[in-house]
Length: 233
Image (cartoon, rainbow, N blue to C red; front, side):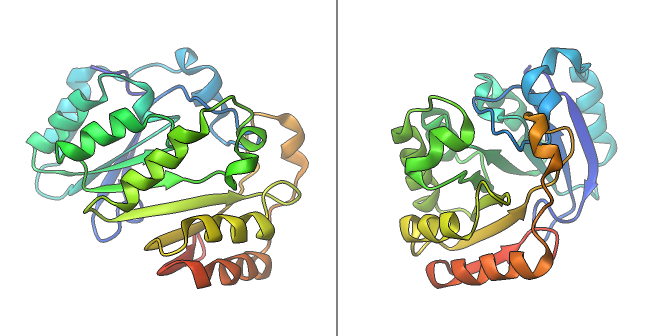
């Protein structure tokens, strides 16, 4: 079974309308300089993995009140055997939400086709032409486009979200993302949090304030069915 690097045992926000736990996996295809999970991305081997039997007993011990499990990272689809964990979760009657960066459309498509996902959140890092700059990676842009199309055309609830960072990803980028994804059901503006960033220089950046975030969200609203601000709503 794929190695689990941590669990947030209780969340009422990660899977809207359900009591959930969030499971963290190590490693990522991107090196976004503002990422606040730097150890999880850069040095997952330095974080002790959770034993499979502990994870199973954790799920079984919360039967009756736990309703869903959110898979996040890092990038969960980096791991070929992620399906195994998803099946373990679903066998216990729990809903599954996947957080992904869109790097693995083949694995995403397979999970959707098998009906193993109940909700997907896909991080749209930037307008397509800025993707490699913002993610500091050599990602095949067609993979991102395909993943977004898969999510939009799925029959499950989904969310596209963008982390906004002063001087790096801002209102103009969000408008361009809106033009790209126009008509999508749900979008979230996510404020950058300066803690253990991959690029230490980003620790000195002051996050957008409430009024700035509200202006960014307002600029996105013409393009999406619903727009919210993470942490403020």
